[in-house]
Each structure stands twice: as structure tokens, then as C-alpha cells.
Amino acid sequence: MPDGYLLGARSDNPPGVLIRKPGYAQWPLRVVCEINATDEQDKAFWSFLLAQLGKPYDKLAIVAFAFNRDWRSEGSWYCSELQAATLEHAGVLKPGYLKASKITPVMLLERISALGASITDIGMN
Image 1 (spheres, rainbow, N blue to C red):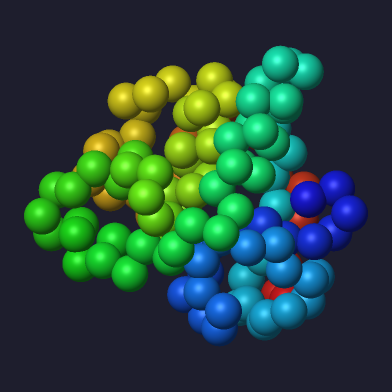
Image 2 (image 1 turned 90 degrees about the vertical axis):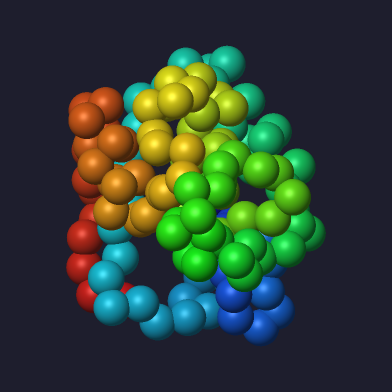
């Protein structure tokens, strides 16, 4: 988020889609991408993302990979699902561009990179 806070879906305590303080957790790798978007796409991105606040963490998502479940269900999210759905809703990624049964952080980064996004920060946290 522009103020440094992080909005995402996590399984930790408390779980779910929340806004968390910068540095609330340690990650082995941090990747930040800058995506060119129109003002309309930017507004749609934030509108959709903020509307997801309070939704539960998708506990079954990883297991569901084996069962070809559609990650686009808006009832619950995990990190990559939330970001991919938000980018699709904003029109940055085309629906169907990402496989309906699986979306991982690596797959999402590959799709974002293919759009010409610049990776602005890669490093240890």
C-alpha cells in the first residue's frame, strides 16, 4: 500500500484478509513489482481489494490444487489468489489468463513480468 502497510491474505494470527503493519513478519524473499495501469484500473484494483477485507484465509486452497478447484471464488483467499483476482478485476490481467485450478506466487510473478512490470525491489527481509 502507498503508506507502507500491507494488505493481503495470510494464515497466521489473526488469519484472513487484513491490513498489517510494515515489518509485521519476516520473509526469506521480498519482491515488489510496479505495474503500469490506467487511473480506471487503479481505482478498480483498490476498490476490489479493499472490499475483500475481513474475508477468511483460504485454508483448503493448497489441497484444492489436486482437485482443480477454481481459485476465483470470492468467499476466501490466500495471498496469490487475492492478488490475481484483484488484477483480473482491474483489467490488468485478462480473465482466463491464469489457470483456474492453481495460482502460486511464482506463477503470478511470471504473469506480471510478462506484462512488462518492473521488479523494483528484490531482497531479504
